[in-house]
Image (tube, helix red, strand yellow):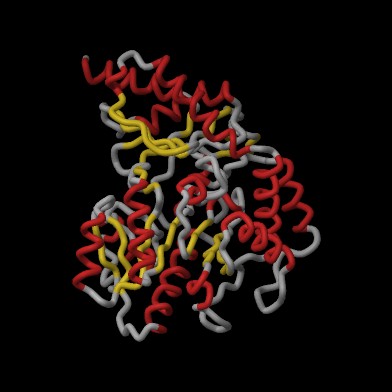
Length: 397
């Protein structure tokens, strides 16, 4: 029946709030209360809510053509692919609906690469703490045992190693002859905003080149301006063979892309993979608007500016600097690890009309939109500090 929420499968621990509309960095609930958005729909609405260029593009395209399928050429999809190619050096793109689907495409691509080399059971090296999605292949590559629990048997063909341990990968390469790829997030998002060391990333790039393995970069969360460049690999100076994106590319419309270059771009042909909805005109209109806006409005520069304002607000309001153990990440992908319990933080944020998230069990994950003002960023940082101050006072009482 309409309004009967029990009809929804209970796969989410939803917070007690329903939003009706948004503008920029602010969401409004059905009662008209305004909330400062520090989550961006989990790193999705990088351009904020109701962005005029995205809204116009989606509305205009919806009035013309929503979907045709990939049986036909899609001009908007080809335009998005051209921009992504120019930005990344990637040669071929597979369009899908999500980051998880982009991960699945990369796994298939890597396995095909192995089979083309005569490897019957290709193996992909993945990292502890990684998150690549929740469908079966992506879940098998994910490093969180709690997320994997209860869904076995999972796919084999994945070798799990500690993050930032190049010797562990060298050891596998020496012992095994069926490794075909390494799949990493340059900053582990769900794992607690944990950047991989640059020396480590350069080391695995060299290792992949020397051993004829593919390097797969999962930039579903780090990409589309969030860290201060279109994709983080540009800042890091590392060229992956396969690059995955989704989330912020559509600013709320479902779109993901598995990009490939070199030999990786030659692995999949007609009939090898597909998606009914992937890269349809509506979603690509949104993506084209996002990529155009990031470039023309100089929003990439905002990531570090807003980060500085947010952290300044945090620092100035904290009553005791030792309440924060660590701050990690780049740009507007911020992990604040407190020295107080985190179980109350999200609800206390909601009480203060701030939207926050916990990742990795012990880290406040802050993912505000690039269109946030410096004043709003400082307010968000100060609000987080106020929450930590309150929890510390409660714990001391």
